[in-house]
Image (cartoon, rainbow, N blue to C red; front, side, top):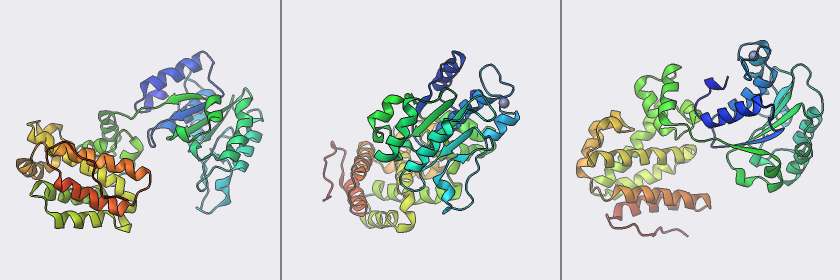
Length: 357
Ligand SMILES: [Zn+2]
């Protein structure tokens, strides 16, 4: 049932209408940030099409067909060659391909083509998911085009991506594109609480730093998060309390340590929420509206010393650097430069003055 998925009500309505009218497109492209629920929606379609006791046009979620569709048979080891094949669910008509490394392979697309040409073994339709469809290269995209051009009427292909611009226009034009929006923080918070995935305090924090992605909210490790936040709080304290440059350079160095490589983006996200919170406090916003409400004593101290003209500039400087990181500048140099630029920035309009080659 779509009802059990979080957020994206307009997508739910659209899919329901298509199912009711029996006009579900044979090829669809689900576009939206990672961890937003695209795959769950795709599986919900597979259930709707194959359910043994459908509720209206939707899957019941309980019958043998629905429960088997929920379970993928992932290969046992990371190096298994089975990653290069269709990964089937427990249902013989529903499967998925994922990129074994950086690209989706021609052979995977040929296997989908072959499988899509069979009539369903058990249910009413065969459904194939292509995860990270932006990882198609020219060759695999061309192999997939063959199926997309004329999908057999009992087979459905659902491509998932967070980077639609990376897909060949020929692929995009043959799929019905469906856009997913970030899920509201309140909805994520409720979900975490209702499913006992976090206590009230952590649910609130996790939901707010998840930036609309339920996947991100679920994978966040609370202990790790609290370490990251402590480190970023030091940065904010150094900035607000007279621009302690030694501390700032030390923090920049820590942020660049290899063991934190995968946390870099998350740490900057957290720094932004802390800056916003201190800023809000200095503007007299009630503490209950803060993301990091539990850090109120620290934030209140910071906001007392804060020149309230500066935080806006800090946030744009962070955002500006993140844009530059996309085009591959040296991250270490950029981080040092960012923190020092933030330290020297006054309340005057920000200048573009990163010392980056
Ligand atoms: Zn069912």
